[in-house]
Each structure stands twice: as C-alpha cells, then as structure tokens.
Length: 418
Image 1 (spheres, rainbow, N blue to C red):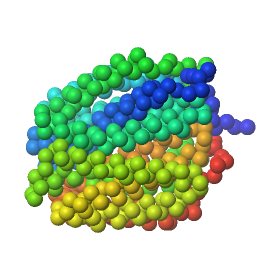
Image 2 (cartoon, helix red, strand yellow; image 1 turned 90 degrees about the horizontal axis):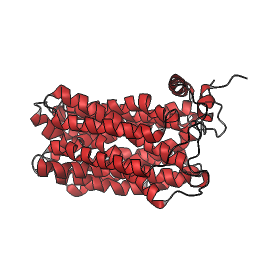
Image 3 (spheres, one colour; image 1 turned 135 degrees about the vertical axis):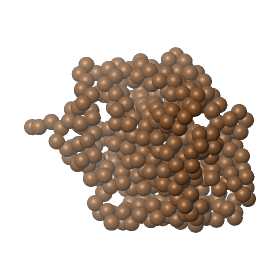
Image 4 (tube, helix red, strand yellow; image 1 turned 120 degrees about the horizontal axis):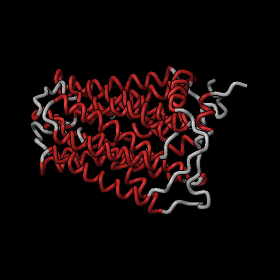
C-alpha cells in the first residue's frame, strides 16, 4: 500500500509534553493566550497609522496600502516557510529564535527612513509575527492533554482575536503620545520581555525519534492544496471574507482623520474594541458547526458580511451607524472563520497543523489584496468607493458559497491524498 506524505509526516511528529499531567496549569494557558495576542498585534499595528506613514514617507494615499500588503506577504511566507518548522524542530528554541529576529525587525521599522526600508521591515514583521502566533497555537495543542486540547487551543485563538483588535487601540494611543515610530520600539521592548518569560516558563518539547524532512512537509502542504476540495472552497471563501475585513479596517483611518470628525489615532484605534462584541458572539458558530450546521451558519454569516456595508456607508454621517456596521461585519467574519476551520479540520484529523498553514495562506492573500485595493478605491471615489468595493467582495463570497454549496461538505472519513 502506498503511504501518503500527509500520513507520513503527521504520524512521526506527535509528541507528549505532559505525559503524566492531565491538565495544564491555568497560568500557562493564560501565557499562551497573552503571548499569541502580543505576537499577532505586530502584524496590525500599522493599520491606524497609514495616514501618518503616508505623510512621513511621502507615499500617496493610493499607494500607502502597500505597507499592509507587504506585511501580509510576510504572513504568507511565514505560513509556507516557517510554520512547518515546528514539526521538525524543538518549538521552544525555534520560537525564541524567531522572537529575537522579530525584535530586530521591529527596531528596523522604527528606524526606517525610506519607503523601501519600511516595506522590507514590514515584510519581516509580518513574517515573524505570524510564525510566532501560529507556532504558539501549535505549541499549545501539543502541550495540552487530549481531553483539554480544545479548551487550550481555544484560549490561544481567543488571544489572537483580542490581540488583533487591541493592536489598533494601542497603536493609535502610542502614536498620538510619542509618534508612530514609538509603536514599534515599544513593541520591541514587549517582545524582549516576552522572550524572557517564555524562556523561563515554556515546557521542553520531546521530539520524535523519526522526523520528516523539511521538503516533505512542504510537499504535503502542496498535496493538500491541490487535492482537498473542501480546503479549496472554504479557503476561497476565507480569502474573500478577509479581503472584505481588510478593505474596511485599512481604510477606516482615512475618513475618520478628516472632516467632519478629525479624530486622533487613539480614538480611531478604539473603534477596534467594538469588534470584540462580534468576536465573542461568533463563538456560538463553533458549537453550531459541531452539530453539523456549518452551511446554515455560513449562509447567515455571509449575509451579515454583505449587509454590514450599508451602515458602514453611513459612517461619515453617523457614528452610531459605524458602530453597528463594525459589530455586524466582525460578527459575520468571525463566524465564517470559525466555521471554515471546523469544516477543514474534519477532512484530515491527522494533518491539522498543515491544514492551518494552508488555510491561513488564503487569509494572507485576501488581507493583502484588500489593503492594497481599498486605498486605491478611496483615492478614486472616497468612502463610498470603499464601501462599494467591500460590498462587491462580500457579494462575491456569498455567490461563491451558494454555487459550491453541495461540493464543500466534509466527510469525517475523507481519504488522504497519495
């Protein structure tokens, strides 16, 4: 019988960090969540700062979205090149090395004086911040006992959501007080403190005796992308959904920093806190997906994503409409995200880490394209152009889901590609 590369790589990388312990200490679970939040925040600090970067580096409004696109390109490279390393190297030492490199990248962004240096620094920050975040989630899953794995990974994922949203608030506040460069210097200091804490706290990992080659891991991801129909469909929905989210969040600073509001970066970043309500409400989507209602949740969530653009379009005239639109947008987006992962994980229970990497590739591509397109849309047609673009992308996601509805039902006993 021919053995698939997916089974081969996954079967030799399982290890038990706590073979005699039934549950992880609560403090360690909290550390995983906080470290995930701080790591992912680095990827999104720039969103409320695009107008300041445009002025400081003499970049046009139409082109400044490339800053976030460079960051998302770094995310994609991390998912392809760095995240799989956790299956063949000691995660404790790997993450500490990545933290050291991330500190250097953050300092480089803070010291950058040319657009090219800024873009290179942002690419490195996106790459290393993503590698840290996904590495921590994989570490949490490995460290947890099977009976508590969902709770522990859920805590780490919750940290990612909160970190993503709080990044905009922290970034805006620090920029108002001490300038945008201080955001990255402050984050470098936080990462240094985190490195010390992780070094003293993270458990040692017991590596398997037989480990796959790096090339085999990469090839197995290509096999999944090429052959797994559910991954292709739900990944495309994720690409469109994350593009819609990026279109909104990357452009929000532009109208709110101008008349009639003239809000500071702190106030603009605080709108990210509104999205926490949507993120918390979307947790219900996971339990519904466990009951086999993934497609029902998907349809409702995609409708929410589309309808959110009507109140968002009214943002220049009503802050209440803006708040309602943010809640609906993030509720729909988080529900789709949770449902996508639930369906994908059912296809190959023995390849979760690579499935995450493959799925998040769609996320990075969508976020990068959305950031680049939205600043061009704003430059051409203002806030109305941004909302029309977001609505068009959301409608495309809804129609794609409808067309592929009967082709994206995961089978619990899906065969592994050979």
